Length: 128
Length: 365
Image 1 (tube, rainbow over the protein chains, first blue to last red):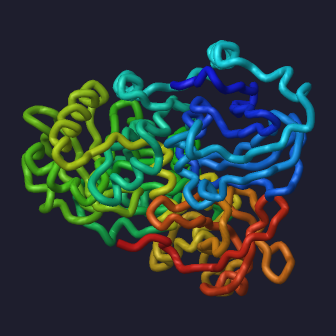
Image 2 (cartoon, rainbow over the protein chains, first blue to last red):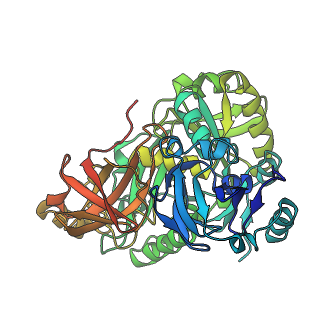
């Protein structure tokens, strides 16, 4: 299981890549593995807004429905439409092709409680 | 509650299976992935551990009369060495369980029942035995005496051929044979299953389960045989429109409502007959419908089914069909609303997603 060091993580199993004001968001390798085969994903529209700790979308596997929680607040600048047509990409490449949305971050304080790769890995070890 | 484990528990863990609680058992839900296992069963073959299923033997001079009274189907229509799908009803017509009866001979039958209902079926049989005066009929819980494997898929015959002491092609649909797997594993091998694929169910002593699993997996290595879990078992049965107890069948649902009228024989007597005969004659208040999504979205159990802006029913089972790549569901609706082609919608998280009533099964070979 992979936990790239250049990403930040949440306890709801999303990853965040911060580049300037833009946060790219997806779900972790651990999350996709726990879900099993992803068959459907619902994402917010481009231009919409997301709120930290609030659901921004849904990912469904064969057996389960899971809410996606936004790690930051801000406006959605880009949506990965490709994974709506090919949700299986979330299982295959969770940190790459299967990124979900890009958000223009409302303020730097949004990033304060995000976890490092080591902290996240430790968190899921304890959660098991 | 302490979960029971099948004799193959260690085998599943060593294969990396995800184990989940199911009907009081710790069972593998998936190994590599539900979709991969599902598609392996459709295109080549999958091997399932279904040792959690219950087995109850009914025997004695009057066993046939007792069985006839218990089940909706007619066991006199089959010969020794054949199996029959049937339902066990209360006086109300509600379903105690759906099951397969194996007819060894006129005096001996093996009922294969759902894991979650095994205790309930046993209690019901004993109640009927006392009430209807069958003191001489033997009713024996044999659940602990059998492990069960299901080898399912078009390659099942080829995989089993070198392992079995007769040609598996010689075992007709819904027939069974007492045979040897490998050199020395005694088994009951039946041409049955719950996936809609060709295949076999194999009953054997629990201590032989691991050796049989290994032997079959080795024989299947050239046929893309995969271990398959409960997840694939569920998507496979749903594609076929097979009812699942607790979803499309239950104490409050009759076989007529569940669309299983062809397994109900009014030419004989059985418990629940009056209610079912009336429903068959006058029509039941609801019918089980197949529903195919026309828009993206995954129908799930409990989601409302709407037509003309009004609720007409609820989804009892739903998923995305791995073979068809579209959302499919079953649910009970008013008979007049259940006509194939009728436009309906499924309410998915507040949004009405377009769907249509369709004939079952969803998947055809």
